Length: 387
Image (cartoon, rainbow, N blue to C red; front, side):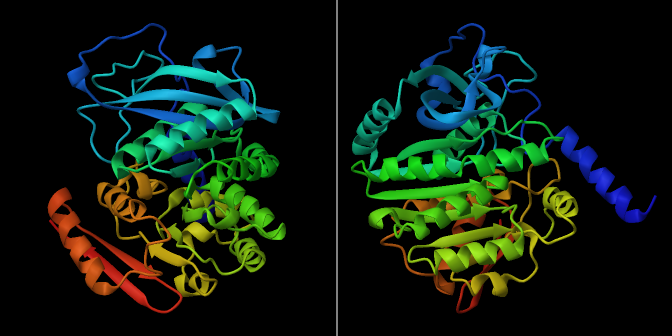
């Protein structure tokens, strides 16, 4: 067995143990667990558009990994415990019920009969929550629960001033399901496009998108389709686009960007040279580089995007380094600082003085050190933090 094969098998084993998600996919408790209100930090209303089938074998999952030919809509209420640590998703072990005083807990699920009912509900929430929406598109090997809890954590930790909307495509939530997941994400392109158009028809002023891993492929395809129809910025309502650990072939991404055109609003790629999950993805895809661990940031930036290299920042997903954007406290707070300024008011690119001030503040707040290299179409900047 060659050294390369041993490395790939090792990565596959690591993914089998951790993946992009947790080992079980129960969202709801079997029975209600009551705790004092003082133990709860917040309750978040997560709106959902999904191409998954509704779970029948295990209703606790709510939606499973089977594909639906139509989009379903729901709302999930999730509590965050007072003991929550920034960057973490505190979860119950195995299939045990969640304790709201200690873990993220889904307390209620509302199903909407059709797109019209969902549009009305999400529109009302947008109107009272800041006129902004944050759309999260999850990655490979994610159950429905994983996407719900990740978006809850992001909305909570970034202090996002708007309505969180999860687009959940039909991942099998299995480490062996890479090809199935790729096909599922491709099949969901029209559904994501329709969801974004639906949001744009509300009174929302800005639709921000964070996509992770294989979800970035789906997001880029939906944006490409919008561009083809002449509405690439959703009538001026598209805000930030953040592609974290993109599992996209570099050449394919370049062609997508050529069709989409140079962005008018902040468009960021978060990559990391030590992303072990993407190393396996690259191997499966014929040894071709993925955007998320590509070594030429300037090449990507030439297409009008801002590239943030997270290689020197610590990851928290058991060494896979595939979710640094969400589980590294410094990066989460940096993302929050950016998201809280509407994209239309944000500068085209940060300046070094601003980065130095942010870095010093985050270093003191988090008490750790990191260095981010930010490559724009015009220059390279460094953000250093230290505690």
